[in-house]
Amino acid sequence: MKKYKLLYRCYGMLDAKSIQLLLQSFNIESKAYQESAGVALGLTVGGLGSANIYVKNEDFDDAQRIISLMENGELVLPDIDEDSFENEEVVNFEDEDENQFEDVD
Image 1 (cartoon, rainbow, N blue to C red):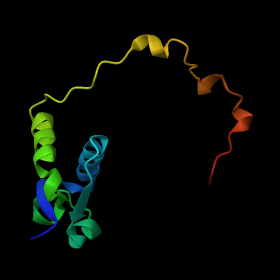
Image 2 (image 1 turned 90 degrees about the vertical axis):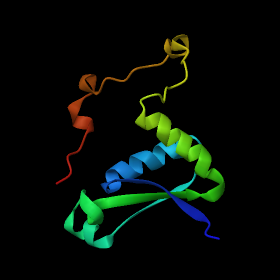
Image 3 (image 1 turned 60 degrees about the horizontal axis):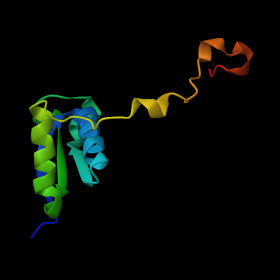
């Protein structure tokens, strides 16, 4: 029996990497593959442009639920205690001395 199962097909590697990060946030390991010709030609639609995301068999059901929640717009972030951010220092780079930054050619 194969170790990984196809979970999702998406448009290109950018979408695939976004979904991989989503799955990773739930501690689900995934692998994304795109046809090499599609990568070389920069395609993001059609058979050559699609990217496939695979997850381990034992994670498939959980991953499928997460994808379903994502597609239905029901995936929500947990409540965040806003008071914990009150003492956070916010850095505004516009106030910084421009001489500190070096442009790269």
